[in-house]
Image (cartoon, rainbow, N blue to C red; front, side):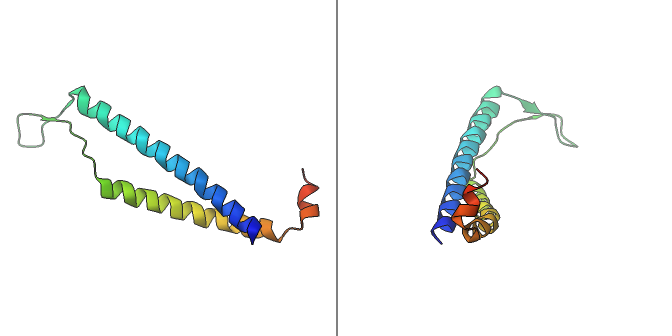
Length: 95
């Protein structure tokens, strides 16, 4: 059980790091796009374009974070379960 917890903790730490890095990168891209002054083409029936404005939705960020952590936890569970059943001597023979 301790080996399984270690595997899951490591997987969730990697997932959390990836989520934080991805969120920061997305915020950086958002700021760059908003500062660029790009004008979108006019929609059908209109004559003037609209400025590009990428909005921030904190709930969407939170939902993405939860979904990624949950997915990573589920994906790490099965290898962790398998690794926790292997005797230590057998596991070390592959190193």
